[in-house]
Length: 112
Image (cartoon, rainbow, N blue to C red; front, side, top):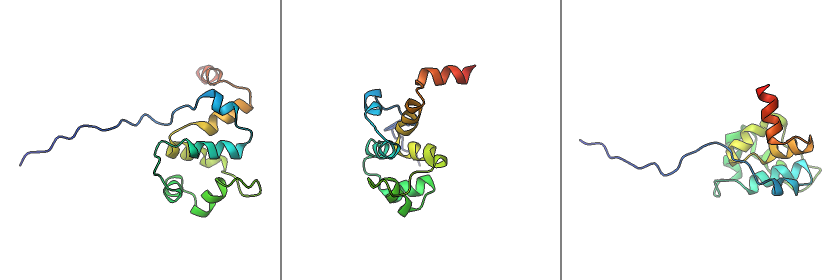
């Protein structure tokens, strides 16, 4: 019996950066989370899948993605998993921009 060779269809390189113009247009943390979700790589990913991959309850995901500011927000400990699931670093970039840090400055400080 011979083995069937399949070509690799895609390569996953981890979450990508969002254009800085898009990050600058985001006014709040809640909108950064929502934008991260809107820019997700896997366009057919459901909120239930997102909940499973991030270790969150599905009802909490609904709150995190709500435009109602009175709903609960994505906790800091879930940001990395959320970004990995969505395939972009929108939330981290927004937080860095709020601290007036560029990605370059962040890398320099990490190397020092």
